[in-house]
Structure formats: C-alpha cells, structure tokens
Image (tube, rainbow, N blue to C red; front, side):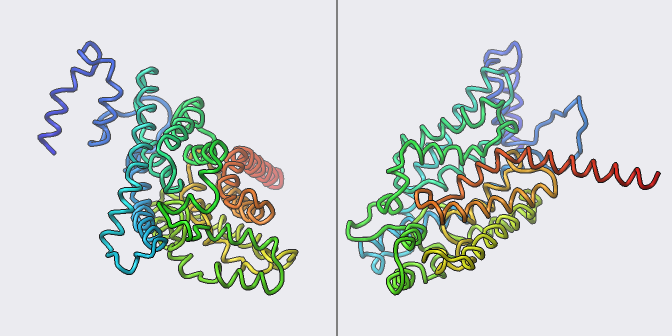
Length: 394
C-alpha cells in the first residue's frame, strides 16, 4: 500500500490546478479517496467528528448486499437447471458458474453506465465524485430479472442517475431511491420484460412454469373453494423454499435468509435504521391480518399475514430500499410512521391491484415523496409539545 500511496502522490500534481490533466481532477480524486482516507477536512458549517465517512458507509452497505448477491448467483443457476431437468446431474460449482455468467454482465453494465454518468457530471460541475453509486450500482442488478436485456438495464440506469439523482443536485439531494427509480422506469417502459412467467428464469424449458409466488397468489383472486385451496397447496404452501429463496424472482430478492443477514450487518454497524426495518414488517403484517379478518376473496383468506413478509421483494425493500438515509424519514418518530406505511401500503396494493403484484417498489417511492412531510409534522408536533410544557412551567 505504501508503494501505491507514493505512486499516487507522484502523479497527483498532474491532476491539480495547472497540471497537464487538471480537467480530470475529479476523476483522480475519486479513485484516490476510494483507495485511501481523504486528507482534506471541511472548513465551514457545523460538523460531527466520526470514524466513518460516506465511502465507508457505502462499503458496508455493499458488504451487507453480498449474501443476497451470492445466493442470487446460485439461485439463477439452480432455477435454470431445475427447469431443464438437469439439476440432479449438475454439481454446485457448475450451478454457480452459470449464475455468475448470467449476472456479472448486468452488474458490469450497471456500474459502467452509472459511474460513467457520475464522472461526467462531476467533471462538468468541477465537483468531487461522490460514492453514492457504489450502492445503487449493486442494488439495480439485484432488483432486475435475470433475463433483462443489457441495453434495457443501461437505459434504466442512465434514467435513474440523471433524472432520479443528478437533476436534484447529486448524492444526498435526491428525493427518491435511485435504484427504485431504475426499476420503475424498467417496469413501465418495458413491462413485458418485468412480468409474466418467462422473465425470471434464464433459458428455461418452455414446459416449466416460471411464475413467482406473487403471480400464483394473484391468481387466487379469481379462484374459490377447493380449487383455491388446491392452488395454494401446489404453489404457495412450501414456505421453507420461499424463505430460503429457491423460487423464481428478481436476482437478489428471493432469499429472506440472505436479506436478514444483510439486515443484521446494517443494524449492527448503525448504517441501517432498525426502526424503519421493524416498522415496515409490522405494517405489512398488520395489513395482512386485516385482510385475513375481512376476507372477500381467496387471496385475502388463504395467504397468512406473515407469508406476505417473505413473498416477492418485501424483505429486500424493507432492509435495503426503505432504509435509504437520503430519501427516507429522518426523525425518530417519523421513521416509525414512514416504515409502517410502506409495509401497510405494499400489502394493500399487491392484494387489491393484480396489475402491480410487486407493490413494494410503488409503496417505497410513494413514501419517499411524503417523507419530508412526515418529518415536518413530527417536528412541528415536538415544537408544540415543548411550548405547552414551557407555558405550564411558567
């Protein structure tokens, strides 16, 4: 590392003002601060000294995503070989290699396009390159179907970075989660590539159903009686596979176990808000309980409230999307309200609107929009209570 430090120090003057490559100063500093702790400090405003900076925060989130990524790689190969009937004759390594071959290009495209745009904006503005896309660049592939065409991933990523982030001022200024903006753009611009049975399993056999548990659950709306019970038992009763993740779905969203490992990392390091995570699960459970009590169709009656929490992208959204420190609520009480409404609305939308079975995306984006309003009313409420205490004391 000392040799690398000396090399960077030797080349640094070339990228500073008056140097041969001064126009690329932002790009050089981005690579330098990625490798080493920056040696500059803030000179204005009020700051709190801490042992962690934005780069370290983003790195921890990426670490927390690794369990979901690794399982996604395995599950991609597992679902493929299961669909073509060759799973029994395929070893673990071959399954992982197949999954890696399918997923790695999506990750590369996400980072190349996203970071390329980030670097371009930083150069045009003369600003430093922020590390925010380190996380978004990994989140975007994990919430995509494995069959997503690379050019569509590139366009969705570009839209998310430019429209969802840079137009608001860059990292720390965006009002929506950039990764979810990419998924929303992909969903509405190319709906045939984000829905149906053919998009969740790479190169699957035509005779093999690639429907996700949410798709099977949505079919319960139109089925009644014994037929509904049979449908549930055939496709939705194996909750262990659903919890572990051996089901079709987006690359990183299928394994609740892997996601919960990531949640432990985020909470233990203080990066993710446990208030939001717990509140999202609580909101989803309460809405599920209400549907069980009200009834009305087989979907409401047969799907237990707790099963909603392990279906689709609910757990992934609760842990990695809702906890975004920029687009989420900031106040302590606001985090409870914000998280509860996300879970509540996600289950409400997925049950009542079959056109949006994966409602977690819409729920989080909606609450991203209202997060500042929630914080405003929480702060105003605190001010009013304190003023009342002052009057009583007087």
